[in-house]
Each structure stands twice: as C-alpha cells, then as structure tokens.
Image (cartoon, rainbow, N blue to C red; front, side, top):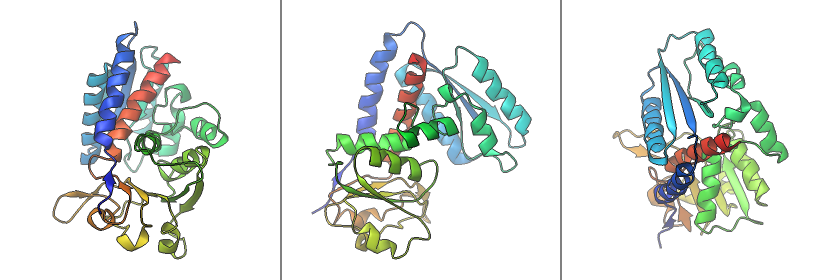
Length: 277
C-alpha cells in the first residue's frame, strides 16, 4: 500500500490565499526586499518564484540583483539602506553567496525584525529559548505540513537527518517544542539506518540524492523530504528514494511539490508578520 502524499503545493496555495485576504485589509502593504548576488541558476529560479508569490499575496517586492564580483562592502550597504527604509518590512539575502562574501557577517547585518528568513543570531536564539521571534521558512513549512496532514506530533519520535542552521537544527527545535522526542543525526552518526528505523517522523535534509532508502524507514512513518537534487537524467529528486520509500511510509512528501512550496508560503507569512510588528 502506497503512502499518502503530503501535498505542500495545495497547502501553500491555501495559506497564500489566507494571507492575501489579510493583506487586502491593510492600508500599508508589506514590502519585501530580496538581494541576489551572483549567477547561481537555482537561486535565480527561487527568487523568481518568490516574486510570483509576492504578486499573489499582494506584497510589494523588490529584487536587487548584484554581480558575482560584488564587494562585501557594497552588499552590506544595500542591507543598511533596506534596514533604514520604513517601506521595507522584510529583507532576504538569497543563499548561497559568492565565496568571497562572509555569509555570517551579511546575515548578522540584517535588522532582526526584518529578518524574514529567520537566520539572524537573535532570531536563532529566540527559537532556541522558545521566545517570540521569526523562525526559518523551511522548518516552519515542514511543521505546517505535518499538522495539516494530521501527523500526530506529541510523544512521537522524530528523527532529523542533517544538522544545518537552515533546516536541520531549527526543525529539530520546532519538533521539540511540539513535544516530539527528537534525535538529530549527521554524517558521524553510527548505524544511521538503525536510528532512522525508529522514527515516527523522519526528516531528510542532507542534500544527497535518494540517500534515504526503504530499509531505513519504519512502516507507517511520516517522511519529509527536504532535498532538491539534480539527477543524472536531468530530473529533480529528493534525499529520499521516493518510489521505494512510498511503499513502506504512511505519509510522504513528493519532490517537487512537497516542502518547496511551503518554504515560499512561510516567507510570505513571515513578511506579513514583520509588517504587522
């Protein structure tokens, strides 16, 4: 019996429609500034999708496109200008940045109240301590998708594979806040398959095509695939071997159409939240 699909695309559309209704009632519309440095093809696609989402929701968006050779000083100057612009409620610096740019310095330069990606150390600290703040978009989207799909969270054993600051660590914290028992795995985890087979909820965020195979998944588990990888035939695939795993999982996200649309929907929600103060 195949797993039930957790349709992130459909849920994202419903969320954006709700956000649109809220924005329609606002006198001052939320403003989002996106800074794109370099020529990374995937980043260009992501930014274009964010522009379209802003149009759908009614958020004013501006994209600052900078060359790969942009200096760190110039990039910081654009952030400073956006910080001081009262019409800008959200600032997003698209990652990855060119190699000569210090990403930590750049992210720290964003006003935490306008940090709609949730990557500033102040927002990361708020998430860790359970204080109010802006949570990263992808982890927030994963939580909304699990809840909408009816996945029991309280008391569930959630295993997260991947410990990045963007997905792995923050989604582990959000799952913990939802009263899951959380195991955070990484490249040094011993007998990874033995750990993942214990998971009621399995989140794969390692950036390796089809890394999670059928024998690593517990029967009936909810499997969330965060990966977006370009396969040898040019198609997109996730970190989960979808065709194999769907035969044992209870619920599973597709790639594309799972976590990706939810990330953008949560960006819209974070921007609206920042505008509302």
